[in-house]
Length: 65
Image (tube, rainbow, N blue to C red):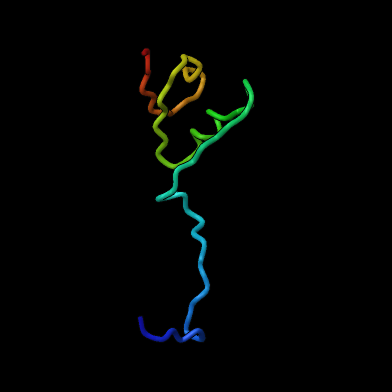
């Protein structure tokens, strides 16, 4: 390995986008997790319960088993 020019190292830039990240939301019953997650860009809801019927504009995929 060659030498490293420590004066040319650029600082890390944090992206403001969630693209490329996984998001995990945790919270109690009726705290708004699904409603908040459905505000993300192009959400896809893997629905384990029917409560999604009150959220307009989402793309649900019902999971029954």
